[in-house]
Image 1 (tube, protein in one colour):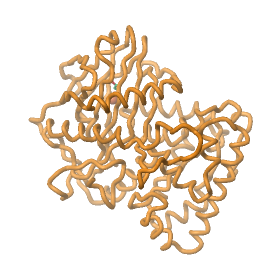
Image 2 (spheres, rainbow, N blue to C red):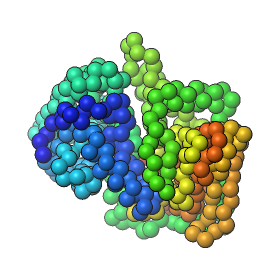
Image 3 (cartoon, rainbow, N blue to C red):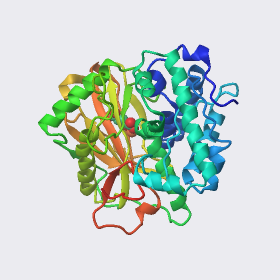
Image 4 (spheres, rainbow, N blue to C red):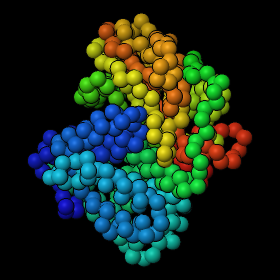
Length: 425
Ligand SMILES: O=C(O)CCC(=O)C(=O)O
Ligand SMILES: [Fe+2]
């Protein structure tokens, strides 16, 4: 495998998909997937997309990765594991596509933060040089992609970056992968010493229904965002017997000083500065947790938000729990926010069931309400939509094994995709 190779024929097929379906998302999905069947489906998907999108190869495994692992930066270990998985999932002849290895350091700090600067300053000179070379090399690749795909938003944005900003940009735009890596990094550390996670209290109700999650003005803003996302939506292929829907991932993204992350003559990107969307959802996770008996571990963080649209014939008919493995970082609470009014769609019932044999409850909740439930215990599915469109936002509060039992402040807190130095936002 050669470093920095772009396979030109397959690049010709890529559009903005290029960014959206970068491997990071698949890795994140694989990490978070809900069942062995789902894992298999995602791996198949990985293999298929691997054939379609032969992207930029940054072979981090050989040099930098060794250095990272030597430096005991656990992200190195995580990346190595991800690459191994990726290699096994892709056909042998496919060049490794690894668009984004987010530089998630042990304290989860973004690359230009004081934390990052301190980390970098502590590196041996050889490692620093290695890193700098990688950034330069990545910039060259972005430049080459820009020649191939001059008109995509991704490229316009990427090409405008200065070299030093690249890692920062990767960190921000690939939040889902970063979350996965950050979670796994801590899980590796936690797994050494920690006992199994606390089971949810037996007397806790299995799910909570919350209403009024967004204020009217927030809701108007959410709807406007969704309409904007609908305009560039790409329909996901069906995973038969599992899911057929269109899903867009919205990452948590805020700039430190509140200024727009990208200035210039482009219209503002609706996917930047999304803190306003996350705050009420995190508040709802906290409310849901309280209603369920407060089982959320002390140290928790939330994932990106998935915006799902189910049009006529669409479904998520596979009865599943969102978390099964619990070995590393795990999803603790699931939140499904219903954006559509019940009269806007037919079918599309949200069915919930506690455990394998529990009784099924079918819900068609009001718009702006949310179901919150234990990600490990509550099976759920979405029946086929027969009319109109059903829209939801889905996100999870995640934790690591040790965080289920660690001592911490009395109030459980949810941080935005960051654990480590300041998990208690
Ligand atoms: O969109 C929904 O209503 C549920 C989605 C879901 O169950 C999931 O993403 O795991
Ligand atoms: Fe689910």
